[in-house]
Length: 195
Ligand SMILES: [Zn+2]
Image (cartoon, rainbow, N blue to C red; front, side, top):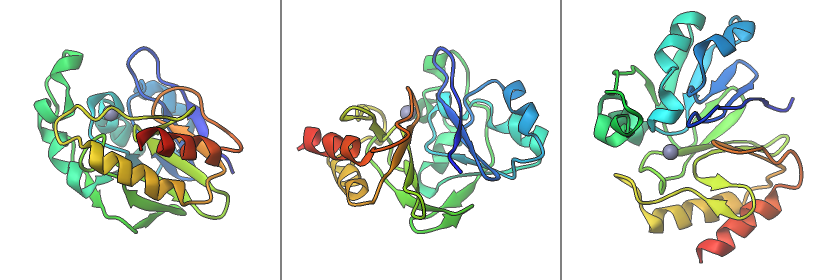
């Protein structure tokens, strides 16, 4: 089953619904109402405000648990890390459980992919090559910004290289349109552009 995209509007990030998991929570909470009973987990690809702003409200509506890469936990209580002030809001604290590299959640393996932020994660499902890449990799050979608090160009390179080794079929990034097939070429292009 392919992820269902809930595209973000304006500065909002895309959210994806796959299995019992909502990935990222930047969208208006009302948009998940049709899937209310399906969502058991909310996984945040990283701690930036445009990906997390509705997490608390969606968790209330669904009773789901919120997860984030272990090293981005501090973002959920810190406006200067989450960039919330840049989006005109203080950071409302979010309670989340940490995910570690190698954890498996709802059929997806967690990859710690620092670079865009120190605790960014990608989610990969081996059986059909679905890669959910947050703001680490974008289609067309693009990749995430690395000029934010805890960002690192060196880490981003290594993270994208690691993803380029996977048998990626489709790519679902935090912004823009997904690549539903043949996405490994996109990931390899991102890697080439970083070296
Ligand atoms: Zn981001």
